[in-house]
Image (cartoon, rainbow, N blue to C red; front, side):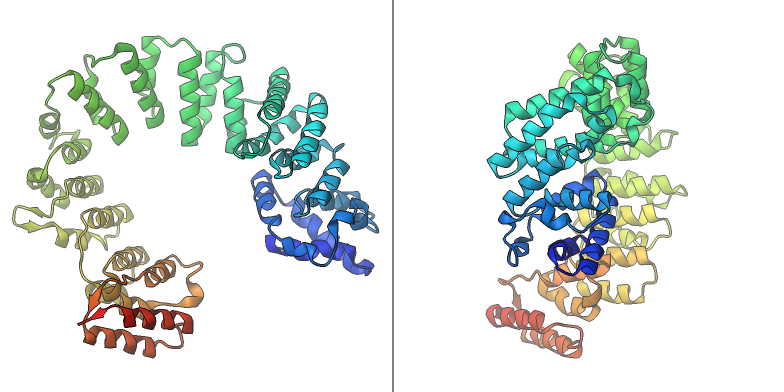
Length: 498
């Protein structure tokens, strides 16, 4: 079943055909059992949109018993009631919510109603939860967190009521903290992890060593940033510990440690220049800021001196970030290096400098050659260099290269570059490549479709080019919809043709 099918199946529960009712109940139950918290939250948003469900029945006068009668399986009845709490009719939503009020596994559905657009429903949801949260299991409390997080993003909930719900959940979780394994927190949904981290990372709850374990096991960047921020904020960390964090394998941790050390000292310190060679650009940028503000340290010379050494990979990027187009010559030689990392970094650095030439070498030609490189990271760097440098190769060249290209990765970049060419120049080539039945799923066709749909109505084109566009549409008439053809012809009548 697809999510859109639920609005078709749900009214069937009111049919007089018992077989149809049970078939609908089975289908709804199977779908509802497959949902996790993020999908339930999405269903809450989507299911309410089907106001057409109210055309055949007056749901205000119907009761939950009307849609569950004849269904013997208690699990199916529960699924039907849970889905009913998301119904577009407010009266029916509230009735279903009251019906499942005693089932704590359904509290996530009730929590979503804390942000309902009907005040009475919000009040009912609050009364149900506030009365029962003290008695729920800790697993239920943890399972509620994604729904609470989603509700908090709304604008309708009562602040004091919601704060009370959050406090009760926090108290329940902290009271039974030993039931939550620190090693499994990282497997929870992001919203759950963030809530747990905020209430647990404190000397009153966890030791510094336990908090450190959370940091080491967390893999998501946003949550890792939260954990290190809380550790540095809640625990006393000496200079030695800050130095340890400055050398952590995670750039997120290193960057936060750098910020804390700078906040403490308020100035540059001996040895800070070593972090100019950090692999993370954000850290290099912060160090450059500190050095420029508090010292007369020659950053560009520092990087230049480290070219042709064991530190050259980062030094190349440093020259690009702090140099000028005049430095293109010393970077261009790395475009021919035998190490892919050096080639990739040279492409990045040169595009950062916005250089178009290195001596007598036309960089656009080199970027073009690397676009079809077997190393995907180099091909991507070449594409980014072309894009950042705003280099145009012309629609005809891009189209012909695309047609002859067998590398799927390169074909993707060629289409993206073609889509950036002037709208009327690229149009006939895009029409020649358009496959309408594939554009919803195929990355290349989606780019083609978007580029076809965007046309400059203030452009000027020649009569010959306008005829070329019309001829292309005629040749591709089986692939081009009448609507798209009419839109293009309409625009052709209203732009300047010279």
